[in-house]
Length: 315
Image (cartoon, rainbow, N blue to C red; front, side, top):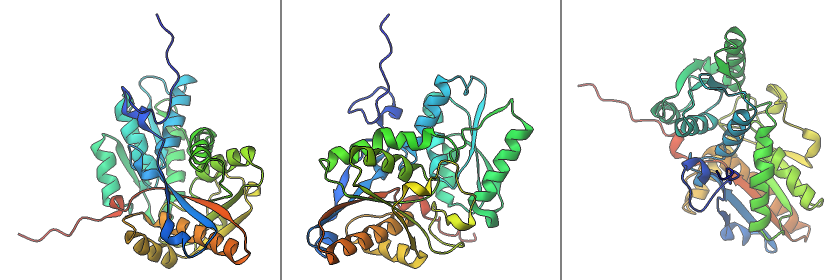
């Protein structure tokens, strides 16, 4: 009997949809680069993942590690808190691999995300919308404490498999796609997994690479998926000391940038707009200082899962 083949992210052909995670394209945004001669601005299009977002990578890594370590035993239900994208990832991967999934999310997440996760068979538990993602975290911890035998709780905010997914895949893809020329990584902070894992590996490959985080400027903001760190539960996997700097982006800036990016044929979520605002700020600074650079940012998802259905007309 032959030994099992190692799991490969982003395989060109596969017998499972889970093997199609990763190898997303890197798009050079030439129209923005023209504003800053000598500086290339590129975006990693994570909505090309099977589940439509960057969260496919850590969700898959956490599930694979848990199965390998015997933590996700048959009969147990995977449960975690999510504002949406990780929940979609857990849901479709769970459906693909035969794993029951329960999700705790604020009741005001988009209707599209609720429908997508439910369509994959996930059980949905709603937390107080006024408490945001932190309220969902508190609720899922309470459920796991009350029923430890029923649930496997990967805890995306504390699980080192989250940044490791990006260390192993996202960073290496960016390195290869820029032919090792990347000088700056600009990415938003949600769980912190994307920027921590990607930045950590890029710095190993080239210690001169600068890692810049993007966060909402306001505690109460409209940049879904991003955290205002000063007023939030800080994820255990987040290490601010590994960053060169952190940029504060207003909700209006992120939303306006999404409108601008639509003229490029990109219909994106608002966290992508905020990331692009940050990337352009770095590109502008480099240009003004007469420095060349290759600035790479992450576009986590498309805008379609934020759309609300139109109100039903009365008969």
